[in-house]
Amino acid sequence: DNKNVYEAFYAITRLALQRRLEARAKAQEMQHNDKTNDGISSQTVRLKTSKKSKKKDKKLNAACYMASSTKSLDPVQTFKILIIGDSGVGKSSLMVRFVDDIFTPAYITTIGVDFKMSTINVDGHQCRIQIWDTAGQERFRVITSTYYRGADGVIIVYDVTNGESFANLKDWITEMERHCDKTVPKILVGNKDDNDNELGKVVLTSDARAYAEQKVLPFFETSAKDNKNISEAFNEITRLALKRRLTQPNNGQTAAGGTRIAAKRTVISGGPKKCCTT
Image 1 (cartoon, rainbow, N blue to C red):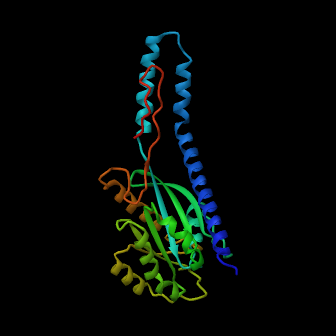
Image 2 (image 1 turned 90 degrees about the horizontal axis):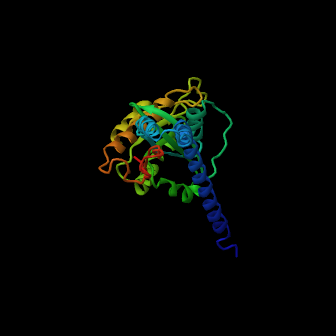
């Protein structure tokens, strides 16, 4: 009867994809932390092997501990940013242009969810952003809806040459509000505003701006092809996410589940052996 066969394979594929993406995110985060603590760890090992003078070692260890602690106390803010919108509006192109600074004209449909990471400086804060590019097709909606959990910011994208993608914004906003905390910041992006746009612009800037003002959304018209307003859009959503993070009463945990990551302090020989994080 072909009953629930597709659904079963679809579900196991979704779980496998989620496991792989989470493992990739964890690996990239560990790699970043290893690089951060590299210099500190080498100093620690060198100090532990030297036992000629306990008094000198203790003084030297204390000095190194203070220096390393000062550096590690600078928190690295980690944010989960989602990109949502109809299929074909250029969500993947926006992400690839921002992270890798390349543009591929060939259209490749995203299957489920894609993922990239980038680190930027916003208002003096080091921000590591995890960018989640979600599939726009209705058949992938059951997968992508699970990735709203823990989002720190959302980029809602339409195609300036496709009026239907603009009309569907209300559905995407409704879905986002259903799965995300109400305080999660979001911005509106009209993509494919290319200099040599052969298809023609059908969504007027004035109409899009009026809609953004109605929804109280920062608004950008972008072109992944011409690298227009790409950095500005990602910097803005990160700035809003950072502002929200810093105003949270628990000073680190976001209401939607995001976390603030900081480098671990290294335990120095002769000091108290505690596991400390900031």
